[in-house]
Image (cartoon, rainbow, N blue to C red):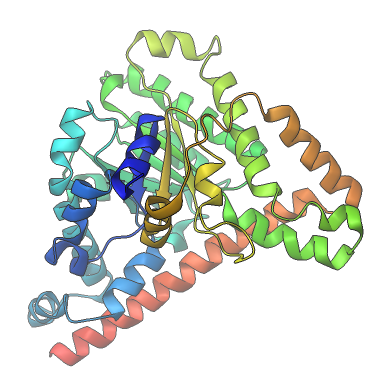
Amino acid sequence: MTEQNRLAALSEAGVSIWLDDLSRERLDSDNLAELIRDFHVVGVTTNPTIFANALSHGEAYNAQMRELASRGASVDDAVREATVADVQRACDLFRSTWESTSGVDGRVSLEVAPDLAHDTEATAAQALDLWKGVDRPNLMVKIPATVEGLPAITSAISEGISVNVTLIFSIERYLTVMDAYLSGLEQAAANGHNLASIRSVASFFVSRVDTEIDPRLEKIGTDEALALRGKAAVANARLAHEAFRKVFSSDRWAPLAAKGANPQRPLWASTGVKNKAYPDTLYVTELVVADTVNTMPEATMKAFADHGEVKGDRVTGLADDARQVFEALTAAGVDVPDVFEVLEREGVEKFIASWNELKETVREQLEAAK
């Protein structure tokens, strides 16, 4: 089977392939256009780490930094202008995909500043600013699924903004994310918005669950514990999909669907395999199910194109097996609620660190351009 055929099979199974990366170099070199053409890529996700990496390598942003420095732009304004410019170009590149899929795909995500993750009002205000600033219908504004982020998600949806909810780790938090989405749709309907134009994905993080749980199992060290390594992340995602199916077939959902509302698709994020003992396509092959998104680093995408397998639906009907995995984890001595608390806290902290790194890089580039 050829590279294109493997990825075509994944697409035909109902999985939207999104690239988890964006840079001006990708845009200028036509690399992103090639991935759209040859690798069935139908969307892009970004985050502060991705932009920090993009701006710290190469010279693609130098001309813009010189122009920004010449008019005395602040670091924050320069960061926003640079990232918005990239996202606008990517949105334009995906415009035909957006049109041909009736808005399902062709999406590009841009995140609110991560240091606002615990500030509801500031997050909601920035989501609206980004939506207006990018001014592209195929944008998705990324909002973290922190407790404080949930009302901001509702607020953004109520304004007709399409939202990518990020940093979801636990089923419990995922249920509150879907509730926030439905509340936003209900308010959007009351505000007179066309619900059919609003799209959302819920980014459920995968590999980081194994990365956190595996060392705990190794510390416990029993045969039972060691046998559970590499199983939690996929099990967690399968339970998330069961929750998704229940919510979007509920009595609460029915009247919204009747008004043209779209389900909030699950998006499998953090699907690059961190442990080299596991197959490098693990979090793609084992999470194939229709009407989902898998956003992949290019290396994971190329690995799947080279030797990935589509073994059919690997999610539906496997929730009971997934529950047994978590029962076994608890029995082995893993504090599962603590795992998810640590993952959310570290997820926010890592993005804040990347955001600060991004701002420092831009500060240096502005100084050099003066």
